[in-house]
Image 1 (cartoon, helix red, strand yellow):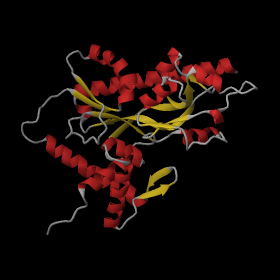
Image 2: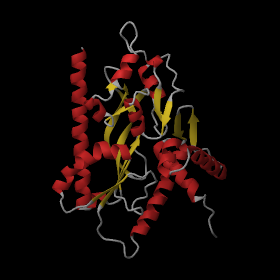
Image 3: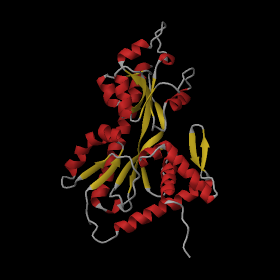
Image 4: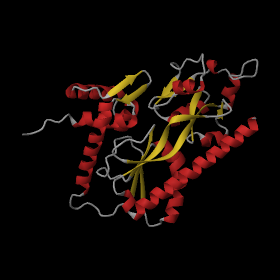
Length: 312
C-alpha cells in the first residue's frame, strides 16, 4: 500500500525554518517570501494535525513535536542526497564547494582564502553565494557557512565565531546626533534595517536596555551591504555587524555610536557534508577554516579588551 507523504515543498520550508528558527532566513535561503514559508508550514501543520512551531512576537521556536519531526525530515533529505551521490558516473573527486552568504564571503572568507590555496595549491575552491537550500551532497556542496543560534540536528555543525552588534553611521551624521550635553541621541536618528536579519534593531535595543527609540520606522534594505552603503551616504544609522563592518570602521567611513559592541545570540557555523572528515582535502579545508576562525575570534576579544581599557 502506498504511503501518503506531505508535499516536498512544505517539507523544505519546514526544514529550513526549523534549522534557522526563522521564517525570514528560511525564505531568503529558498528564494521565496516569508509569507510563502509561513503559509506552507501552516498547510503542513494542518495536514499533519500537529503544531510544529511556537510563534511569538519576536521569536520562533520548535515545539517538542516539531523538533522530533525535524530529525526525520533532515535525515530523509540526507538519504536522498546520499543516494543521488552514489549514482553511476558521479565524479570521484571534485573541487571543494562552499556555500556562504555574499557579504561574509567577500568580507571575511575571500581575504583569507589565499592562505588555504598556498597550503593546497592543487585544490580548486568554489564559493557559491546564492541563497538557496543546500542539500548535502546532491547539490554538489561540501560545506556551508550558516548563521544560527544553535546547531541543528541532521548535519555536522561546528561553531566558527560569534557576531557583535553596534550602531554605526558616517562621522558627519554622528555629529548631527550630538545633543547640547555632548551625548549621542539615538532617538533623533533614522534607523536603517536589514529585512532578512534575524537580529535587527529591536534585538539590540532589548539587549542594551535602550528606551525611547522607535524601531518600527526608518529605511529598509534586503542586504547588509546596502545598509552599510546607506549609512556611509549619511542616510541614517545602521546596525553594524562585526566582522562584516570592520573594513568600514578601519577606514573610518563608518564610526560606532557606543563604546563597545554587544554579542548577538546568533553565530556563524560551518556545516559539513557527510564524510567530510574522510577526504584529506576536505578535512584540510575544515581544519584550516576552524583555525582562521579561532584566530579571528581571539584577536577580536583582545581588541575589544584593549578598547575597554582605553575607555576605563
